[in-house]
Image (cartoon, rainbow, N blue to C red; front, side):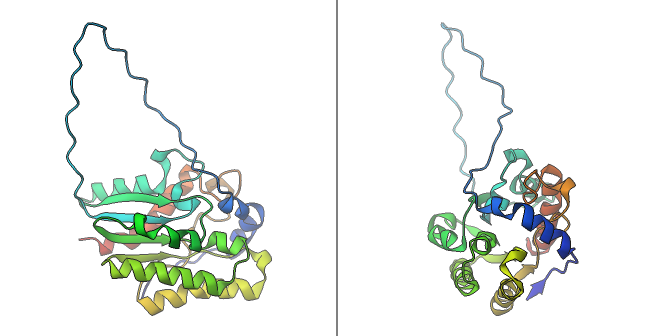
Length: 239
């Protein structure tokens, strides 16, 4: 098991969780903003120029598989961590394509139901970030752990390397649930020998300057730190 260690302020995360954790499971779709100018109208007498056929993208795939934190809730596409991660991959000279497979409000059960289409193609890496909505809904940790295990097994069976991104349960669930929730990720990482990020929101959770008004979803600046948390874990694995 490869563990990326972080030291985070749990009290700040607890405050953030109390204020805004429910927004993760809101089921809201990612807010996007288009900055592209409208196309100019062609002259009536001009001949249409056929668009050049684009070549298929044959690069191996990095699938970012998660909930609203992966989907980039409240941000435009250029600010989402998957876009920032793609930029880092490109700048480092690696030939991979990052796919955003985040669905706002998704639970581990929801993720399990959509793995067939999410893991299509030449998938080399899966960044698995799910479980926060399970905690919000008070679903049994055993059920969450079982669902994550099945997702991991499918990804591994298809030859992908899985990076498990851990989360923290909201404190209102009680100490027993919180401890069991945290331990579930560690158990899975150990069992399947996964590269593991104990808390993917390290350095962001609980900091109002790095989160949106809901207190839980990173803003544009927080998204940069989230990207760094994942990039320093992913980069050593790339070839």
